[in-house]
Length: 320
Image (cartoon, rainbow, N blue to C red; front, top):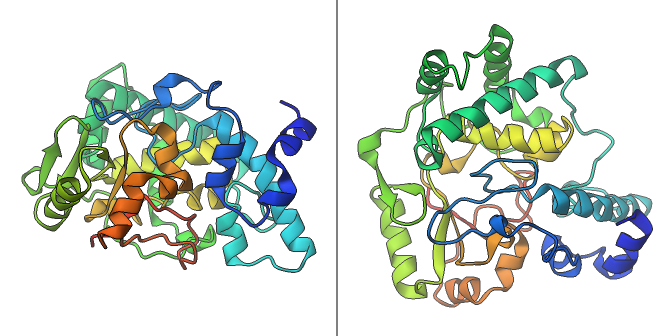
């Protein structure tokens, strides 16, 4: 679909004040996107174009690229009207802004190699296990299994820098919640949530989820739970690679490694069978979300006017 046809199809003038949910509804891509995008209750994992399994919070590449065109136009109109601000950036999160931080070109190849190695690691250990994998465990698997391959020194240095960098450089203003690159998820502190491929921390998180499930019903599903440092790294690098090294754009879709509240209790929910749209603000139009609201359960971390620099996430349940 060329740019002119896409913009005509999206009725851009009616979109400028709206968010990604409307785009997902208006872009008639549903029949073109692979059925494997669906987040079913049986596996709790999905496949995005050109990406592997377990890509929570990342829109499929085809949709991301289409959305980027629309967001770029909308952001340009906002700038022309003198209204470019933090809300503009999070509303048009797939746009590229003049002061976005891009990874230096000489590090792009290393980033791709590190991402691909993490991808092979996830395929080897399995999506569910990968959610809990520590950095030290990742190194051990890579060292001992040729199908993964040992991390090079350049990759190690890159991942170390990725964790230690001040995310405000990207335009992300959340707090760092993990103290070290080698932070571990204690296996005794989590429990597997059946038929989802995900885990929740025992206590407040699991109790809260059980209450939601009991009140809302079996249409609600856990779409992402505990994320280790390695898991969040993989997600962030996937989005950074999808964004051609634009680290600011990546951070508008999900927290950089070390900053994700999934590491200490938050979790994501969705509607069974709603697929990748559970990770768009289309979820806010579902009966599941409306029941959550009606029951007074909804306390989302990334609201439409959040100060973190992250897009609106009605699926992200604040616990911690």
